[in-house]
Image 1 (cartoon, rainbow, N blue to C red):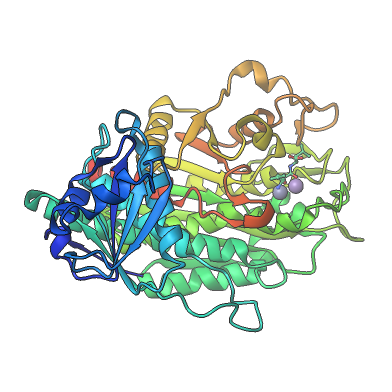
Image 2: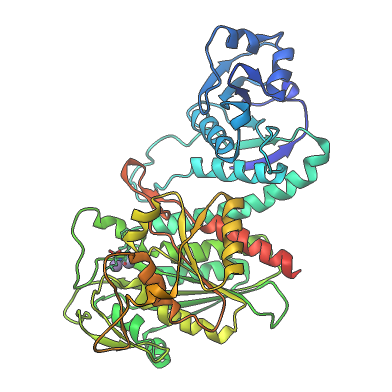
Length: 498
Ligand code: BES
Ligand code: MN
Ligand code: ZN
């Protein structure tokens, strides 16, 4: 999709379709008014006849509106003006693009960024419009034998900017948004690719490709290197698989040489069968998404590189399958982590924490300013927060606040979960330092507690994206979350550091 911004009157805009908003109670937005006057009150007439009430998310496509230079005019319901906030803005943009992509319009002009959203400026509105539109136009059809439908007509979107004084801010927001959208798209593509394509080796190749294109240093550690480092837990998970494990390390040097980096650590289980503690068959296919944490690290680093952020960033991805097999780890096995602590593996399906703990120890060597791990870690997270918020745990309140705010701004929101000492009691073993699972109660918190035992030397946060990284059902597919949150977080860090 090609995007641009423009500051001219919507009535004078030549375009395949111009998109304008209507509030409930037939109240016209400023651009709708402009078209209304240009068309000698055609829109008012349509509304008077009751063809559109202005309900949030409703749409009405008008052809050949006399006096308007656009071929079509798309009216979008905005709901009540008083209740028009972030969510409503996004709903309106989404409704418009969903109608538009089924028309023959090759280009469209969106006049929605002029709508007042409390506390949000033009930059926010442009950024959200771009990410919503790219999201709606996304398809994953590379594994279909025939092109499933004719290429979509819509190629170009112009974002109308009402005030001349806002054009510069809109332009820079547009660039930022496109960088983020590319990162989100990469994360989705990797997430959607099934386990027989997206192996640890494939992830490593994709990281190397990304490195070449964007000047990011990439190192891939092989089985023997991982053994030398003493990553006993990571190797324990990899034992059951025929696919060789990879430990992928990326270094983006946008900041001053030697400045402490932000480290992103992503869970890269390219397929999670559960291992010997095997999962039930229904929906097991969705465990191809168990590398979405890894994908979000690559996506966020791509976005950071495209934005040329003046910040040093390290990415660390332990990648392996979790399979049963003659050589696989068994419940009760005890392994030694890179940190020296021993773990009794009571359930081989709690494998994410086992690969992450060694990666979290590994990144200590970078003396990071902050470490954020991203993982589809627990089914219990889906039960607690559903599919709206990512669960966030942290040993540092300032870091937690930064991430929550980044999520609010990106509208890729996270919720602060507790990590109190009392929860640590759930992890007790008679035979090793601690087990890899606790009781069923508070399963996401136990998992975070497990990780916290490897992150004592730096400010750290853990994002459990089990409920937000993909959608099930008819819209099954990776969401690209939380790339937008991470990109926003990194951008702010870079701003603070500049
Ligand atoms: N990858 C899963 C978590 C998961 C499950 C994400 C379902 C999304 C939907 C993880 O490796 C796992 O299997 N976790 C177990 C942990 C349990 C054995 C303590 C879980 O959540 O059931
Ligand atoms: Mn598992
Ligand atoms: Zn898993």
